[in-house]
Image (cartoon, rainbow, N blue to C red):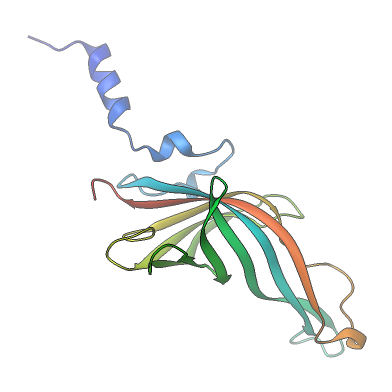
Length: 176
């Protein structure tokens, strides 16, 4: 007896990773996590990126805003659950887990916004918020890029804090 093709197709769709279901519109294929991963956590981030006015390497007399660090909080709804105080590192406020990311791919999100990105990830801690996270997807970014003006020899060493927000999806291997 041959099975019903419609039932087979529905079963295949149901077996697809949940990642496809949470990806916002406009996310490039290169920013999709592996099909062997599933989403486990969706957090919203709000904070600032800190920049310092420094001499521009290779251009004597030229100055530019250099990224120093983020100063942001990640939220699960209205509850703060993690800090983002070092580049691509997230530390749980609830347990001792943390996860750091390394860029795999990025896509422009417009002139004034941080790019959308997919990070490979390494987590610390066997249990807890970030345990087992293997990929991080950053989307829906607003703001956060370095100022284009205002950095000169006269204000070398000055700090500029630029507001930003983003949505983050954290992924683990399927079935973990």
